[in-house]
Length: 118
Image: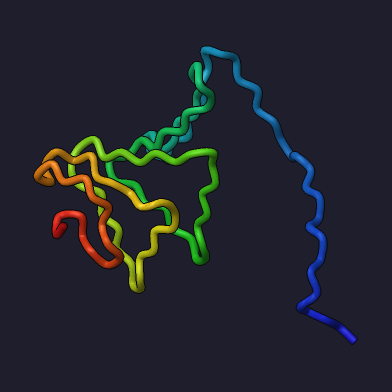
């Protein structure tokens, strides 16, 4: 009997190719017309990956998972927008706004409440 639901161990992967870069070197990927697309370098804190087009899209058919010790998002200009076809859920401690444009109000938002509605 074949059981397609039984967990199978992952097949070990071998590294096919390694590119070693010196401290003052970077890797850049260009389109066939020479347009720069991706730049990888390192600084004092570690690797830096830059997507070189003003508007870039990350697309995949399944879930996107980002795991890190901490995650920081920053919009240098404009708003941060989250658009979902279903509920948006923030799991963790209640958060407070440090936006001075919210009348100095730093109360946590209630479930389903926009921060500007508080």
